[in-house]
Length: 387
Ligand SMILES: NC(=O)c1ccc[n+]([C@@H]2O[C@H](COP(=O)([O-])OP(=O)(O)OC[C@H]3O[C@@H](n4cnc5c(N)ncnc54)[C@H](O)[C@@H]3O)[C@@H](O)[C@H]2O)c1
Image (tube, protein in one colour):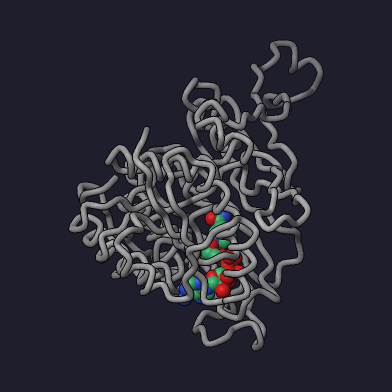
């Protein structure tokens, strides 16, 4: 892989974590930083030695030397920033969700096709070490038939920037649902969802959404599995959890209740022919920890250190700092997938159609919840350009 891709990182909250990874990628040339906050621009720019800094997204887009953007601005900017970048002839990586409106999803699919540039939704969960381990167990037949899936994302957003107030939980479904869709290779046909609990007055913001929690059942196209997903942003007393459990006829993997601990694998045992004599009924299961692997062999050598806690040597001479690699070590894998797609001119794993398939069910689930659990048919995107 050669070609130097010049990329602008847009939004330097979560976005900061991607700056050193792009800097280390052998196919990346120059980096620009974009943020409306001059303080953030200065702090991140000085730390990583990045001179190209913009407070205006439009000014960056107007500079044709930037080949690609990675959008990590607040959710409400995702769709418009994606469309503007594609129309300015730039490749786009965008944090989840792709959009919060079905019309915007359609427009992005069309704009990407017209642009001839790549689009990737940077969904962390299916690039995490836990996902790869589960996928291997499914592919080698260890899990048997998939018969049950529970996705969950509970994250308390009190004290987050005010734009999160009243955010419909299901519109952020991708972390909890996408593993089911990538494992089964299919899309959601329809959904039934309910809101649970009621937001307090000071948690609704300007949103019409009354629910702190939403729970949905998603029927798949051409697969018997019915994923169940719980999304919650307010009023649930528990630490952060973002994961999935998947159960099969031979073995299952259950997400641990405590963050940064290892999922468990249950393997169903044969019925013991002598069991009846002991009065025991039902098949037993053994329990072991899931064997996970960082997948460093999939990455160029300079990106490998970013799968785990890594050291940053600030360009301004400040003392070294250690950063933790969040989201299952997925960040360098996402960067490599996106940059590879741009360099090789092929559609990334989570191109516009897959991104739509992973995002639209959440939009439809919120609609269902707002209509007392009415079944909502999810649009189908296959056959449109861009995997
Ligand atoms: N696992 C994941 O995939 C994951 C994790 C965290 C956040 N995210 C997503 O990443 C995005 C950023 O999240 P965050 O927690 O950093 O948000 P944040 O609100 O904490 O930070 C956003 C940053 O963008 C800047 N910003 C605000 N408006 C802007 C604009 N119009 N143009 C450019 N910059 C702007 C802000 O100054 C800030 O630095 C969100 O969309 C979020 O959903 C994804």
